[in-house]
Amino acid sequence: MHIPDGLLEAKVWLAADVAAAVIVGICARKVRKDLAERQVPLLGVMGAFVFAAQMVNFPVLGGTSGHFAGGALVAIALGPAAGVVVMTCVLVLQCLVFQDGGLTALGANILNMAVVGCFLGYGAFNLIRRIWGGAGGLTGAGFAAGWISLVGAATVCGLELGLSHRFSILGAVGAMGGVHALIGIGEGVVTATALNVLARVRPELLQGSIVRGEAG
Amino acid sequence: MKWWLWGLLAALGVAVLLSPLASRWPDGLERVAERGGFLQEAIGKKVMRAPISDYAFPGLGEGNVARAVAGLVGTLLAFGLAFGTGKALARRKRKEIAGDGDSRT
Image (cartoon, rainbow over all chains, first blue to last red; front, side, top):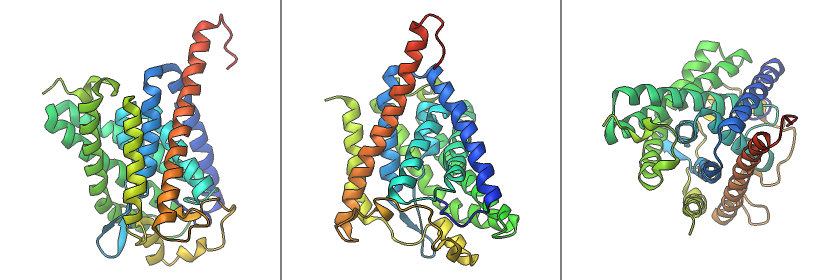
């Protein structure tokens, strides 16, 4: 759901640029305060995996494709602030080197896929994890967090299109949310699978006890 | 071998082996823009030309090889960028703790 140049009105992409710059700045400060040196390689691996996985579009109903976005996974593994930093790295790279997402829309794309994707995915995961422990909870909460994170990002993307008078706001939000409710199933599956792999291979790198799930 | 090298290798595997199999159908946003009749608004509006446009490495055509090589290069760049950013932020923290009251960073 990388927005290209030309779809958003100037007032919308300018406002999104400012909002994204402020929030990414706050997240970078937080990361500077909290990030442990041993977590740095996981940032690199997450960035690499998100970039690679975003290239693998899978077909959904009716001649439409979708791809994994990654906000929920990265935020659950690293915390939302580091998640936003990693997602921003990937989105900047995609925009500047691969023509994926317009330069004017970069702030909007960061707002949708990094900020909304990470914070919504992280919040949903921890909320569900609190009442659903164990390995089943890791999978269930991971799947739900992935789905919610992607549909949330798509909904905000729809809002930006609506504010740019591409659609009625409700129509844009509904259309984006509807398509991505299907794509979100893929997001949920990849998020839950990757979390299970990480929890098995490198549990000590995952921040917070909720991922490890003492509740189960 | 360091654990994170395995992680990077797995990501490279996805980029090189799976990305050529990716569906070329329009994605969710493109489909919505197409149905809404405003996808053409984006034509010719690019404000810059990126070196590896649309995940096809230049000089290799438009096929699977071009996509696999673009995936390889991009995944390495993404690793480096996220790793480097993390390293830079973690290093600044150490300096601030070590430095006596020098918080200009």
